[in-house]
Length: 552
Image 1 (cartoon, one colour):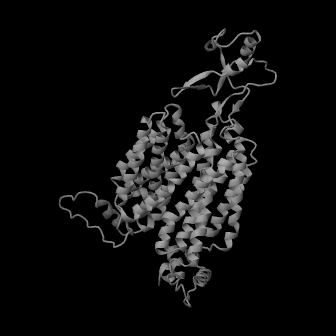
Image 2 (cartoon, rainbow, N blue to C red):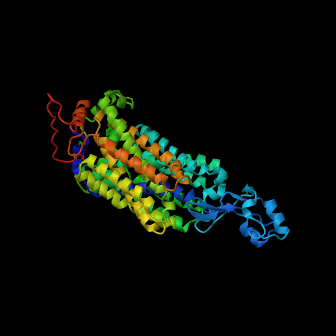
Image 3 (cartoon, rainbow, N blue to C red):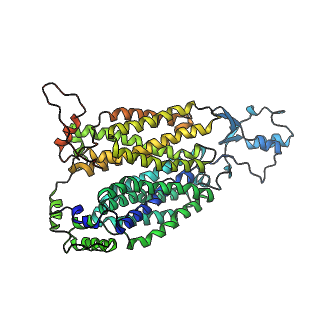
C-alpha cells in the first residue's frame, strides 16, 4: 500500500493546482496578521487630563491653564492625567481675583480626581476604546485586561479548532473561523459598553489563531515535498506579516476605533467565493474512509495540472482508517510520565513561553517606541519579513539548538542596552527594540519546527499542542507585563531580556534534531538525548543516525 505522497506524486509539486492552493491559503491568513494586532491602536491610551466643564464654571483663562497639577514623570514635567485642583476652591479663588502662582501657592491647594470625566487629545487618534469607555486612572487595569481577554479567546480557539477540524474537516473549520472573525468584529462596532466590547472581543479571538492553524494544517496536508515545507515554514508566516503591515496603513487613514473595526471586518467577505476554489484535505477524507471524494479532488487537480491520473489513485486506503482507529490515544499526561520526555517538555515550554511573550510584548509596545505609532508599528511589522526568511534559512542549514540560543541572546542584548540610550536619541532606542523583535520573530518560527522534531510519532501532535498552549499563556500576560513601565520605564525590557538569557541557558540541555530522522519511539528519543552528554565510563557513545537530508 502506497502512502499519500507517493499516490499523488504524478501531480508534481508546483503545478497550477498547487499554486492556487498555496496562494489562496496564504491570503486567508492575511486577516490574522491584521486582526491580531488591531488592539495596538484600539487600546492605545491618548494623552488626557481631567475635564473642566465650560458650562456653569466661571474661571479666568489663567486659572483654567493652572487647574491641572504638574507632575514629574521619568524626569519630565507633565500635566497630571488623573487629578486636578478642587474645582470649588479654584472657582472661589478665581472669583475673588487671586492669581495662581503669584497670590496663591498651588502646591498648598487640595486635589481631587476627575469627577467630571476626562479630556482626550485628538492629535493621534480621533477616538480609541480607552477614550470611549474611560479606561484610565482608576479603571486603567481594564486596558491590559482587554487585550488579555482577546488572547484568552485565541487560546480557547486554537484548542477547540483542532478537535473540530478532526471531526468536521479542515475546510469547514477554516471558513467558519473566517466568518467568526468577520461577524464579531463587525458587531463590536456597535458596542455600547466596555463589558459588551469585551465579550465580543473574546469571541473574535476564538477565530484568530484558529483560522491560522486551520489554514496551516490544510495546506500542509494538501501540498507535498519541498512545497509543503515552503508553505508551512515561510508562506503562512509571510501571509501573516503582510496583514500586519497593512494594519498601520489602514489605522493611519482610519483613526476612529469603530471605523477601524469596520474596515477590518468587511474585507473578510472577499474570502467567501474561495469556498469553491480551496478543496478539502484529501488526507483527512481518506482517514474518514471517504475515498471517492478524495479521488475526485485529486482528479480535478490532475486536470488543472494537465496530467493524466491513474485509473485507481488510492489503493486499499480503507486500511488507514482501521489502523488509525486501532492506535492508542495519548494525552498531555504522557509527556510527564517518563523523565526524558518530561525534562524535554518542560524546557521546551519555558523557551516557547519566553519567545512568544517577547514577540507579542515588543509587538504591542510599538505605539510607545516612536512619536508616530503608525511608523513604528509598520517598521515592527516589516521586520517580520527578513525575520521569517532568516528562520527558514536557519532551519535548512544550521543546528536547531545553536540557532535558538543565538536568537535568544540576540533578543536579550538590545533589551538590556536600550535603557542606556540617551533620551535625545529615540531612533537608536527604536532600532534596538526592532532588533529584539527581529530575533523573537526568528525564534517563533524555529520553535514550531524544533518542537515537532524532538518527539516520537505517537506523541508529536500532543506535544506540539501542549507546548503551543503553554506558550500562548505568555500572550495573555503580556499586556500586564508592559504595564510594569509604571514602576520603572525599562522594567518590561529587563524582564524580557532576563527571560531570554535564562531560556538560552535552558536550550543547552535540549537535544539536537538537525540532520537526523524524526524519532518513531521513546527509545530513539532517549538516544538522541544522550548524544549531548559525554560518554559515561563503561558505555559506548551512541552514534547518531545518518540522514542525507534535513527533516525539513
